[in-house]
Amino acid sequence: MRLGFAGLLLFFATNLWANDWSRWRGARGDGNWKAPALSENWPEDGLKRIWKRNVSPGFSGVSVADGRVFLMDRPDKKKHGETERVLCLDANSGDILWSFSYKAEYGDLDYGKGPRASVTVRFGKAYSLGAVGHAFCLDVKTGKELWGRDLVKEEKARVPTWGFSAAPEPYGERMLYHVGARPIGSVLALDAITGKTRWRTGKEPAGYGPPVSITRGGRRELICWGPNYIVGLPAGGGEELWNIPYKITYGVAIATPIYREGIVLVCGYWHGSKAIELGEEPGDVKILWEEEEALCGLMSQPLYRDGFCYLLDRRHGLTCFELKTGKILWRDNHKLTPKDRNPQASLVWVGETNRALGLNANGELVLCELTPKGYRELARDQVTGKTWAHPAYSGNRVFARSDREIVCLELPPE
Image 1 (cartoon, rainbow, N blue to C red):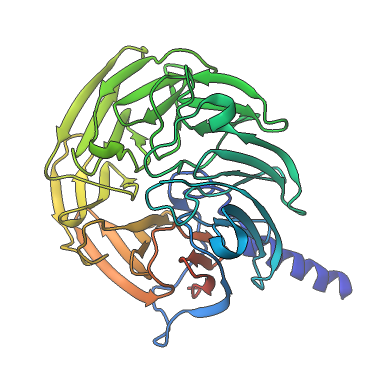
Image 2: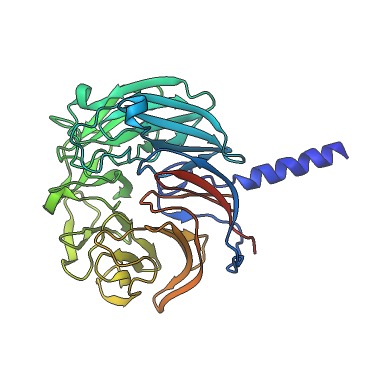
């Protein structure tokens, strides 16, 4: 009887945190959540809140792994000086398990209220990157510093206008940092255990999204989007394999590129979208189509499914278009998130369905259905204050943060 009860507890604990949100954009870094069966009928009085915890400002997205929640913020300058902080909370209670603070002088950094990059959790370690180039590896259980690097001082990394935003990207025994080091090192590969630089690749200054790892012609390759070029970089170090010019106003290379059907898609704010077709050979690269006016994204990575993309266009709202042609099928006329100068909604797929969850800039969580036929809203709830930070999903829970709080809410099962 006792063994049966213990087994039952283990089952529920295992499934509650199944498919944790251990990095930027989920377990695979692609905006797909392997969700349990969830109901599309939400309670009339709103989603059940499990807990709420006060935090300080920051754009850092939330990560969840093994019953722990991770985020970064910037405590009050008058009380704590110029510092950044990594926080680890208990996923069931919201209690602070540990915090790790360090000095970080922002100077004249634009939008300087706090760090931007999500924490990456891997093999019992938490990897962070601050807004002005401080990289740390911390023990997940204790918060103890295992190694730390100042990539600006040590590698001559160039801080972008709005600070470093690309989350550390796992790659084998390395962690990749898109920081624009000089003279070479658009991407730095640091040893995950020691923090030592193992290789460098590319010369393009840093954009705001992490590199995307792909396999092409039997070779590993990294796709990076910087302020002047979209580039293909050799995994393992060296000069770029190819580049497509794309000089962006104010260097706003923000949304993470996607790679599907042999096509790289980038969606910019000022100069629109480009679809780049990659062949088998390193230099077999060409622009498939480009659209400067009708498909303009910003911070939100588009979703892809079955040949179609769903992009939050800055002028027209959520837009569905065909990846191979750029042909627009529909727009939602700002139903998902209100029209704004800088519209934002963090979108993820819910399992293998056509349903998606979006946390919009007003802090509303929206469950919707996205197909080439149109947008259908299923449920909506105000879960937090205004935010640009990406939420995390784990079990049947959502973890969302604003500049004042982080909340944990329960999504009703089917």
